[in-house]
Length: 521
Image (cartoon, rainbow, N blue to C red; front, top):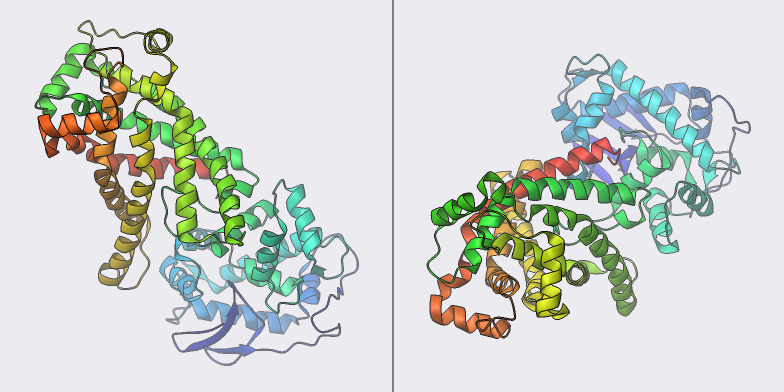
C-alpha cells in the first residue's frame, strides 16, 4: 500500500518497510536487491546455525550494509516528519497512525520506551538504530527456530508446528489467514523480509505466543462489543490467565459497587413508595457497614464460572452459526451478537440459582442484622418451595440479554463515531474516550431493559409458598403497573446507573493491570 506523510511517499506493507533508498531527502524509494534464488521461492544463504550476527541478517535479506543503513535512516525520517533530528512519543504515535496500525492496538508508548535507552524523553537516531539492530537480530533468531528445514522461509506447516509447541491451537483456516496476512507476495510462504516487515515495530519480546497475540490484535476486527467475548482469545495459549484476569477484575468491580447493588435490590422489591435515603438507613440499622456488602461473597464467587461457561458456550455457538452460514471464518456482527447473547443466556441459566440465593440474602429482613447462612437458606428454599424455585425470574433475565447487548453495541459504535468526527476531529481516542463511550452505552442498555430486571428481582425475592406470591412474569407486570404505575418498573434505577461508571472504570483498570502482571500484553 502506498501512503504519504509530510511530503514522503513511502511503500509499506503491514507495519514494516521494504528495502528503501533515499536518493532524494525525504523521498524514500524501493531498492531492488539481487535475488539469486528462484523468484518467490526459498533460498537460504545461511546454512549453519549457531551464534547470530548482523551478517546473517544481511544475508537473509540479501541486503548490503549500506542499503540497510539507508533503509533505517529512511524509516527514522518517516517518523521525524518535522525534521527535528529526534523522535518523541507524539511523533511515533503519528507515524504508527500513518502506517494504519489498528487504533484499538496502538503501542506507541511501549515502542517509545523501548527506543529511549537513556530515558531523556526523546529518541535520537542512534537509539532508534540500536532498537532496529536488536529487533532484527531477535526476529532472525525466532525465524530460524521456526524454519526447522533452514531453507530460508517459513512454510505453513512449520508455523503450525511452532504454534502447537507453544500450546496454541489453530485450525487450517486461521493458519491460512495468519500466513496470508504476513505473506506480502501471496506465494504461500513467509520470507524473512516479510517476517521482519510484520514485526519490526512490535516493541515487546518476539516469542511465538506474543507474535500470535500480536496477529490477533492487528488482524482481527474489534467491533467494540462489550457484551460479546472478543474473537480469537479462546485459542490463545494463556486462556486460563485471561480467566484469572477477568475474574479478579470482576471481583474487584463487584465488591467496590456492592453497596449500590444492595441498595438497588432493596428499592426494586419495594411495592410502596421507594426512596433512597430511607433504604440506606434501613440497611445501616440492620447490619451496619457490613450490611451494604450482604450477598457480595456469592456475587464474587459466581464471576469465574459465569465467565468460563459464557466463554466456551460462545466458541461452540460461533462454530455452529459459522456452519449454518457456510462461513467458518468471520460470522459478522449479527452472528457474533447472536452467539454472545445465546452464550450469555446459557451462562445465566447455569449460575441462576446462585443469583437467586444472592437476592434472597440481600432482601432478607432481619432486625438483629443476622441472616441465615448459605447452606440453611439453600436448604429452606429446596424443602419449602422445591427445586423449581431456584429458577424463578429466569425468563425475564434471559429476555433482556440480547436487547441489552444490541443497544449497548449500537450506542457504543454511534458514540465512538460521533466523538471521532466532532470532538477528536478524525483522530483516535484513548482509553478515556473508550471508557466514556462504554459508560454511556452501558447506561442506555441497562435503562432500556431495566423493567425486566425489576420483574426478575421481584420474582426472585418472593417465596413461592406464600399467598401473595406472584404467579409468573405477566402477574408481576400487571400488578406493578396497576399499583405503582410506570415508575414502579424503574425503582432503583438511580443507584444502578451510579454503578456503571465505577464498575466500568474499575473493571478496565484492574483488568489491564492484571494482564500486565500475567504477561498477557
